[in-house]
Amino acid sequence: MELYVYRGEWGLPTIDYDCARVLAYLKFSEAKVTVNFNGNPFSSPDGMLPYLVTDTGRKIAGYTKIVEHLQSRGCDANAQLETQNFIVINGCIQYVFENLYPYFLYSLWGDPKNVDTTRMLYAKRIPIPFNFYCPRKYVLKTNELTRSLAGFCLEDSIELHDVADMLLSAKKCINWVAEKLGDNQFLFGDTPSEIDAVLYGYFSVLLKLTLPNNALQNHLKQCTKLVRYVDRITTIYFAKEGFHSPAAASSSTSSSSSNGTSSKPKEESNAKPTQHDGTQKDDDTPYERKKRYVVSGIFATIAMVSYAFMSGILSLSDDHGGGGFFQYDEPEYDDED
Image: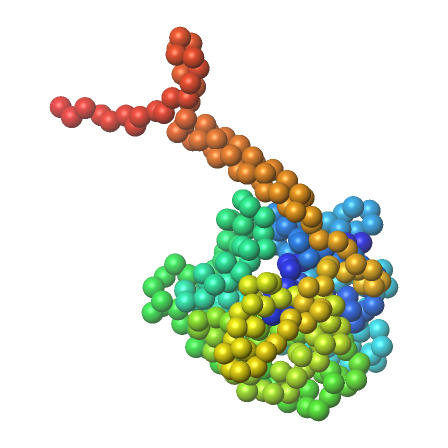
């Protein structure tokens, strides 16, 4: 099996919360799955990452369906827990989804102050030309959520974006998790479970992604137990997969130098994509990247020309004496009487 996810940043294995919780679930369940950190959402059944390619070649997209397939193969992150705790975990996951997820998603893809930052972050990890429209799917998904829960569209004026209740519910959820965690290593003691994978997906992105307007991050950073909780999971399970882009590393180095200290990027920050059996999967070579860009450019050109023909913007001249050049059709106007 092979899992396709977005490459990480800030020392995390991935920038995406769904990809992060799937990766954490793989670690906790000890599933033997090859991870490709250069995933293209255009190849996914739902146009988003993560997606899993099974041994039979079937593609499975989305966290829930991927986890169901892994569990059917005997890879269960909750296997070591008692039955009673297993039932409680499902309730915890539902509580987090209902209270934390709405504002979390809005802060990334709905807030006008943040959406350009998030879109650019994702676009840098999607091949051309797919990076122009794949991130749009996340915006549309967020728009559906705000319409159903808060009664406004993202296209509405910012004054109509009434997210106060969603923000309050998200903060209460974070407080509840911090209280539930206490001094434990994980939410249910010393053994990780699916709820820890879910929380890691949300909290890791919230803590590391810098947005112009990130009220939820400020609240989460005040819960020092949760900050240590995220750092602990990253250190224990994702030491090799943690990634820093060269730009982020140089920015971090210059920042440290200005404070009179020096820093050196961690060896793990340049780690290649890995399999969960410990072997590494090589990154694309410069030749392969160049070939992909050329193919993408050809695809984009064909798509644009095809659209132009179908929409009537371009047409072939019927006058064979003209050499068969493209002819632009001028719009017709009715003569006024």
